[in-house]
Image 1 (cartoon, helix red, strand yellow):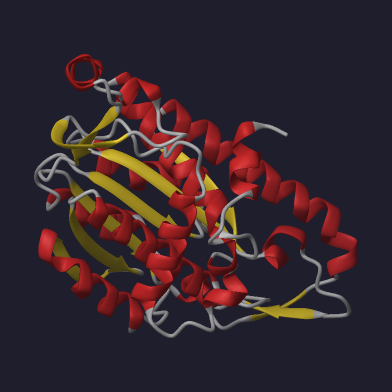
Image 2 (tube, rainbow, N blue to C red):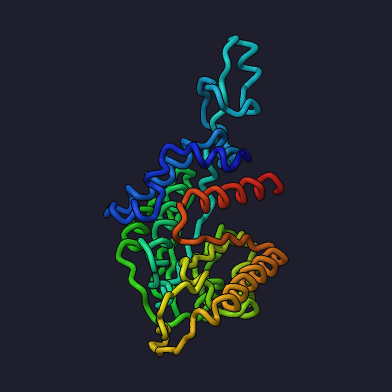
Length: 307
C-alpha cells in the first residue's frame, strides 16, 4: 500500500471526517477540531513540518518523529534525543474565499456543497490557528456578501460567519474577485472554495486577478456525486438552481456524453491552473475530508520546500 494511503487508512479520527457524521455535530469548532486533530494525529509525519522557521522549544524524541529535526548538538551534551519544535510565521495571512451562490446549495446525499465547504473552511481555519496565522473570510455570489479581514483573533468570528451562511444569488466570479484582489493588500495565502460553474477561460481570467500581487492561490473544486455521474434515475427534468428554470432532460441518453464533459472540464481546469501556478484540488463531497486535507498540506509542504 502506498505510504499516503497507508497513513490515511490509519487515521484514528476517521469517524469525525465522514461528511455524514459531521452533519450530526452542531458545533462547527468541534467539527474542525475533530477533523484536523484526528487527521494530524494519524499521520506518521505531518506535512506541516517545515512550514515554519522560528524555533520555539525542544521536546523529547518520540518514535516516528522526523530524525532530521533531532538536535544533535544537544544530544552531544546530554546524551538524550530531543527534537526541535518551531512556531509558525505569525505574519502569514490566510484569506478564505467561499462561493455562496445558489448552485452551492445542491446535495444529493448527507451534505450539500455549501455544507461541505463550511466543514472544509472551518478545518482550514482551525489548522491555520494552530499555525498562528491570521485568518480572514470573504463570501461572494454575484457580489461580495461578507468580509472578515485576517486577524489572529478572528477564528471564532470566522466560525460564526460560516455557521450562519446560506446560499445566495447567481454566481459571478469576475466582478467580486476583482474587488477582492484590489483589497488583499500584502502577500497572502488565498483559498477559493467553489463548484466552479463557468468556462475554464472565464474562471481563469477571474481567478488570475488574485495572483497579481504575488499571492499563493489554492482552488478547491467541490462537486456532488450526481453532478459527476448524472445518475438521476427516471427524472425527466431538472431545475437550474441559479435561474429557477426547469430543463427537460433525457438523462440516460445523455449520461455518457455528460460524464465526458465533466471529466474534460476538470482536466482543463487542472491544466490551465497548473500552467498559471494555481493549485487545483478536486473534491467529491461524498468523500471524507482527510483526502482533501492531505492533498492541501502536501501541496503546502512542497511549496515551502521550493521557496
